[in-house]
Length: 466
Image 1 (cartoon, rainbow, N blue to C red):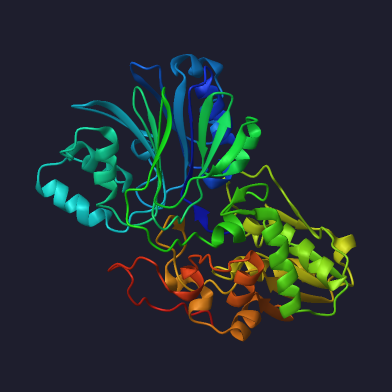
Image 2 (tube, one colour; image 1 turned 135 degrees about the horizontal axis):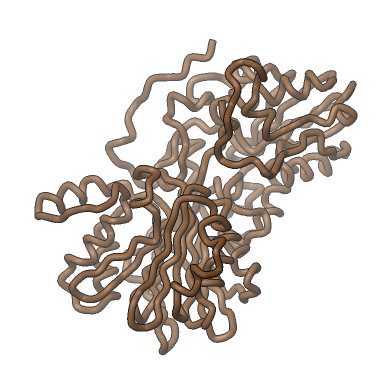
């Protein structure tokens, strides 16, 4: 069984007005690789035409040949890294998607999920539209192409007025780049400057790599249009209460990124501190489940006054797939990625910090691994509330029946993962640690309170573990 983690759908990056646009986009995607490892692509513009290179695989592999960049000319480019949450994992679904239509060429890169995509697709197909992919993103292109408005900006506004859900979008034509973020602001998107060039990225860590200046975050509901004449900002949608995804702080975003007005690393340390206040335990050492558990474990250890140690070492060179023996190595999927340091764990009362428990199978194997390495006690602490509901806004989570906390109490989960004790960060503590204040977050994966509802939210069979 694989070491399961929820996975983000994708990351996007774009730059306008730089002579090395495609090369810098490659570097930006490299910094955003954590947001998607299935496939990637770049579309560039030289002011007359759009040029494309897309493939399955990691950024370094897809763009490993320097000659590729000779086929991506121009001073503007957008790029995309993908992990599919809608649509099959095949080449035709790799983004950015480029199309030619009556008004020229346009490419699109999308982070998020549209909750009404199938309804719109059925309607468009009834009127004769033909879809080339199985992604919800293509719906946006069809709406844009069939819009009666004359300007690109108005056609984009028209198309976005029809869709519901989570989206951060980059559009590229021969002469302009357009960025858009949904009115709820589910996913992060930031704006930067590199000399005279404008840069847009899912996370600020991509700006850091190319030494671009962080200007600001693109606001929920904002559309930014960049041309040779400069940048203009539009807010065409009705203003609604923002709902940025709290799980970006818990797990997805890189610790060095600045999102939703906060540094991710500092927020995760504060999660750990608050977790300790709520679930302090007498122990000898605190260890993280690397890598996402590290900042929270540091915060917990500092608050508790207990030594922080690296009791589990992660193999960073494991790819997405590997040949697994049938019976010869127990818990192979976990052991190939994590290995205990026996000298650190032997005879110790250990607090294990992780960011979440999804199905519970990985946590169970980690607890047994730590105990088999000689730990006298294993106490598990989770730096987020129980994940009881699936996400429909751009994160690949299991169905509700596969989420262990949807049908089992914390004590039942403790017994299943064989820990001596188990404690989750409360919802109140989570929001307090992130400093939510008057800025609400989407925490539907914990509470089931979805900001945008739709027919797919129906009761599902429960997971039977015992």
